Picture 1 (tube, rainbow, N blue to C red):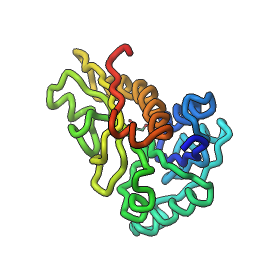
Picture 2: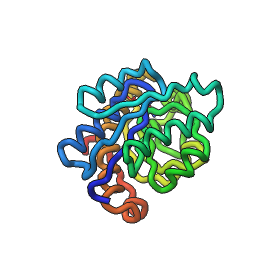
Picture 3: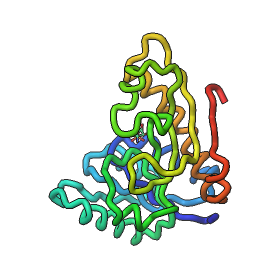
Length: 206
Ligand code: GRF
């Protein structure tokens, strides 16, 4: 899949998107960023993508009035117009329907801020603290119709430290997400089957 074109879906600050784009631009990830699509016109990531020279598009989820299929079809159209062959969700805060998950089955990744299958869904860092775990982290997985449940392609472990708040823990995890996601995307683009067979595990200070 070398020479792949990657579409990146965001809704917010886009720091993972920046990590992926930079890794493509340095050659760490053997692909080019085809487009960044945001579900939110106010997403700070849009300006970051533009400053990196990546085309952007907005599909405002509010414009589809709750019609998730219509929203997904509009996102899909942007990805296809841009020639994307693979999709990386990076802080894309929308529940997807089969319109998107079906179209990109086997070609769509997501990063989730927990060690899946623990803490699917939102507020993962607060829930990790509440549960009393001492190891937390992030996961890159394939996207399927079931939320946060596709095949695990890589995980990074992050220590929970005394005095952590959800904010301090989130910040520690996020810096490691930026290491994990490019490594997993590179492996997946090179050989998806091998990436599925041998997920990448990253431990603290590696
Ligand atoms: C990250 O923690 C990611 O794991 C989660 O949403 C956050 C997005 O952050 N899905 P950013 O927009 O990449 O900065």
